[in-house]
Image (tube, rainbow, N blue to C red; front, side, top):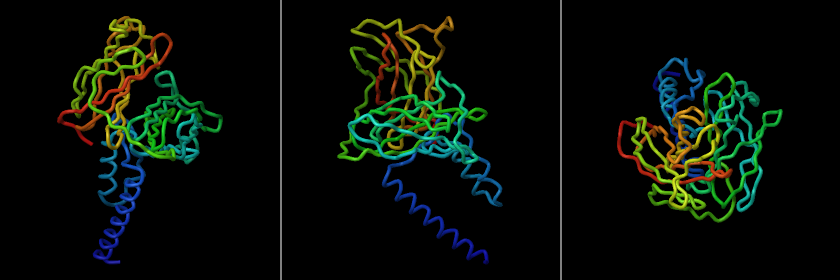
Length: 303
């Protein structure tokens, strides 16, 4: 085949791939990617005699977390892709490795070997749960499903000997879907607690933010550790649900970090736009979730 014919065939193939991707995206919504930048793309994309594979690999490394179900040789594989709306369902999945087999060895990160985040694509119904793994590598958890719609499932884990990874996939709860909309908000109220968010998220830069917890107007100074910290913060970019797992400064028992009322974090969002933030904190033995909606200003972001 001469060079012109090869280029023509390549163009047709690209058009078919793009059309298929558009159809899938229209059906389930845009995919998401990893913000921390610590997930590596596998080497299998390189070495094909042109720059196309290297360009794709470089772009993938810059993508935020959670937008892909496969990355760095690891794949999030649900046992089933449907949930039951308005009920507590059982959700099971496996993480397969580069050899195609289920991974069974994971490092403990933030007191758990697996963090599972589930949220409807309109960012309602946020859940942060910790499944249990069977000997064959199947993870299972009970999952309350508030309503019908398409849900994004994020698996946040570190395979032993590998890099910290966040993978995402979609599952569906059948029924009438009524999307929720969220006005910008930096104050959350839950179960008599008020949590205030201070600080600006600047794309592409490490941005300090503070969350202050009060109850009935009184500062809470005896927060209890949850997942090795006084707070656990997840940020999701509105639209594609790009995932950012934000870590707090300091740790309980380090002699410097107070147990409230402030919880300090450093976050780096990948781009300007709207974000939903979810803070899990524990007090009086109960974990509660405070939700915020913020819009970032232009900066030096990417992705």
